[in-house]
Length: 64
Image (cartoon, rainbow, N blue to C red):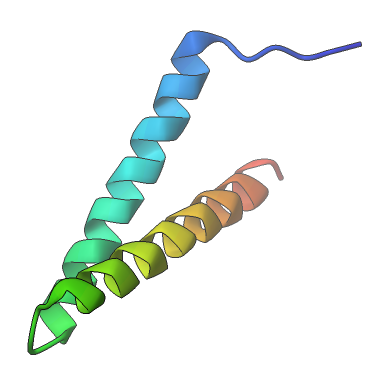
């Protein structure tokens, strides 16, 4: 049996990930002193990983 997600559910998940990414990337920029290309790449990557972990953690707590 397969479980299909609705387009609305997928859009909400993407929106949540983008919101987390935006907040974490902004926080990264606040804490660094110089902004160059490498800092942007590292910050964006770290924010993406953090966004995935934040969503997974929120879903784990919400399922209880």
